[in-house]
Length: 280
Image 1 (cartoon, one colour):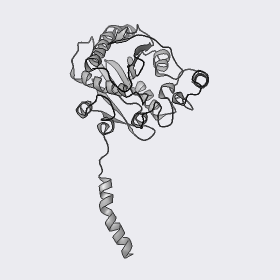
Image 2 (tube, rainbow, N blue to C red):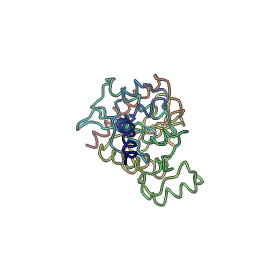
Image 3 (cartoon, rainbow, N blue to C red):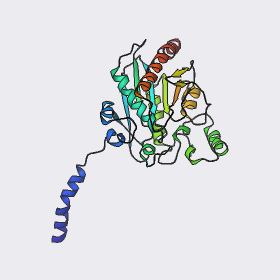
């Protein structure tokens, strides 16, 4: 009994230290991992824990800029594929532009940023396209006839490429369920999905697509079963602008990232705002 007492007593400081160990924040996780993002820049993004978790229990962070009813609502999503690190960096850098730079718009904009949808893939070493369950999140959304089309496409068109496995069923993953919930909650008028490394601009859904953002020109590559563009743009009728940065590991220059942002705002002001007003 005496030996047990001293064992417990000696263990108490270690247990207390473990209980007081700080929980890693978003910048602890991402700074040093994401290209061209400093701690100051990350902290200025003021990412909030959404309460949702990835497969491995990593928080899924978000940031709202603007808000309230009657505004144009835009959802910006980065790093659906975990090995596209520059996509997350661009989303984080755009948060500062949305929060700090005042650009005249026909109506106020409620921005919601989800800069890292696939943190498990992004934080893996090396980073990987899929989530921790091996699912390509951009093939896991509930497009019509998913149960038939997604497996057939994966088997016949990709040769069962494990990097493009659509999963066992639509919305099987906590990350895609989280984004689906965000779409239902926010009801965005526009979705911007940031990828890499093809160096083009893609578009799905109604409205006239932007012809360019910065140095990226429109080159629509088609739709895929279970993709966000197919689900949001074609099935739900929400315009989806898909940005494919030229490099997955390096961001464009700061001036280029800002120019892309300004071009996005100009197109949003002219096309999406007009389309939203017509719909009302």
